[in-house]
Amino acid sequence: MAARTFVDASILARLFDDDEPGRQAAARASIGATDGPALVVSGPVLAEFLDAVTTRMARPLSAMVARRALAELAELTVVPADASLVLAAADVADEVGLTIRDALAVEAAVVGGCDRMVTEAMAHGSLVRGVRVEDPAETNGKPQT
Image 1 (cartoon, one colour):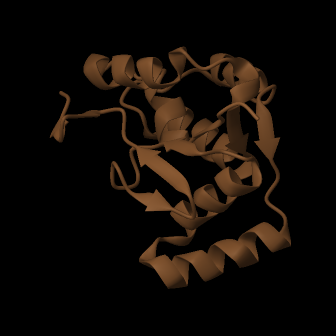
Image 2: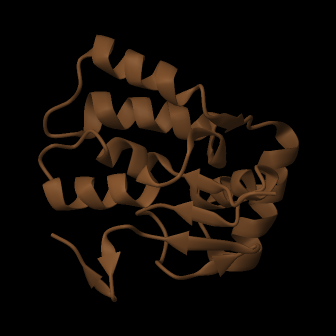
């Protein structure tokens, strides 16, 4: 099976954040070489992405642009958040000390067959449940600005 990458909402939103060009370029580079079928998201990630780009960015996307982007992202492999995923995430959150949001992303990555997760929400270089966490803004241990 080809390597698969789970993409968190923090990275998806960063792709549209023109106010942080360094981080935007890092986010693009982190998933740019990966083809569509190898990219995985989850239902909660899609919802969080929409919230982030329409309400949390300094210059939010219009509803129409955000909806178009969401429709394109929904064409990736999407792991649904059912009760078993949430229960497994709750266990991981307790065992590893993650927030439920981060544990849900990790569990979705596991279910999606990913060996890599790109996110700004977790520690760069950590390994959780066999998934390597990468923060694209980190380069040789130094945050990009």
